[in-house]
Length: 83
Image (cartoon, rainbow, N blue to C red; front, top):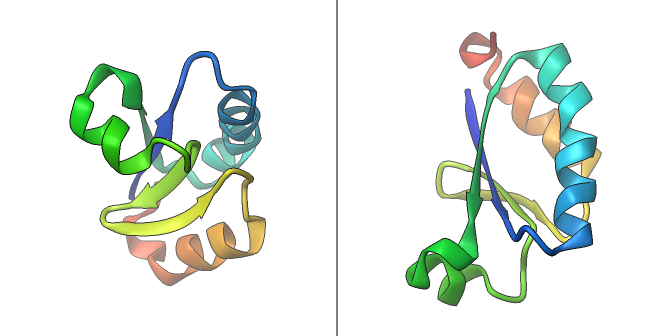
């Protein structure tokens, strides 16, 4: 499974969510792509005030703060893709 974190380097919420995701990633083995929205004008326009945003494909898991129950549900729904 691959998750994407839309991120800003200067954003404290972004760094907090990335840090919170590390134990989840170690436990469940999902791929985590971190994309800086400021590096792409289209991403910046789409996610500007929502970052950090955690996505699985086109589905938003959460934004601003890690929603552990939603992340757990997302990971549980696709066990064959994890690891």
